[in-house]
Amino acid sequence: MQPKVEVLTPPQLPEAPVITCYRCEVQDFAVEDVMLADADEVSTFVTDKRRMEHLSGRWLLHYSLIQWGINSIDEIEVRRDELRAPSLEFIHGIWRNEPLPSISIGHGNGWAYVALIAPGWTVGIDAEPSARGIADNALDLMASGDELQQIRNNPEMAIRSWTAKESVQKTMRMGMKLNPREIEIPIGEEICDISIEKSILQLRNWLHEEVHISLSWLRGDGQIRSEEDDLLDATREAMASGTEWQIGCNSTRNNS
Image 1 (tube, rainbow, N blue to C red):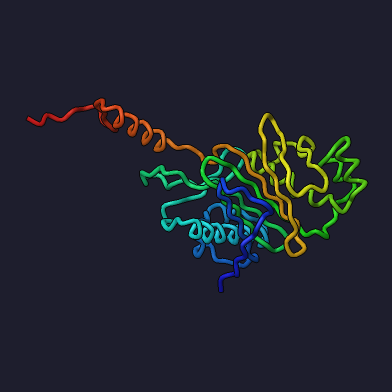
Image 2 (cartoon, rainbow, N blue to C red):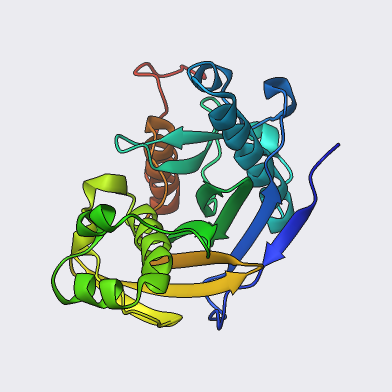
């Protein structure tokens, strides 16, 4: 039985870029039933919990892409860069390079979350139960200075700060390589802009059924380019220029 999918509605989204967010409960899918799952990657998971979260997230991604209007899911795969940031790409050998949406996948407390954003942007989503506490010694790892003091003075806001920082790390496509103490989140603000490394991210925080959800986005390239992409671009430029061009062969044909 497939899980029920919920549409998530962040506060005051702009008309552009287009962003969609979904969640579903984590279920125990078989890997062969999830088209966007990588069986080799799934085989490395040590716990059933991690396997179920991963497969549910990939199933939800499939669902989200169909809602986006992409029906050729069998031509798409999920790849990861050197920091394990995921992106959608056409499978090697399928000579297409039309832009695909950028993606973010998250898991928390038995739920899988997916956010999609229009090409030319990156996006990050994270969620945790609003009642979840954060140990005092962990606060030093996530904040410093005035921000840390504000969180200590408002401990009920700690989990929102946590999910916001996680979403920003995903949007920047850096994961924990971006130190959360370098991400300063205005306490108590649902809608704000965040400046990091000369980049401006837009951030939304909201409560959905006792779960804190954070979504952020940024102009940028959320795709991993392949050699096929480079060749397709070069071919397109050559065709547009009107000059003679060849693909993959140094010899010429005698048509006489």
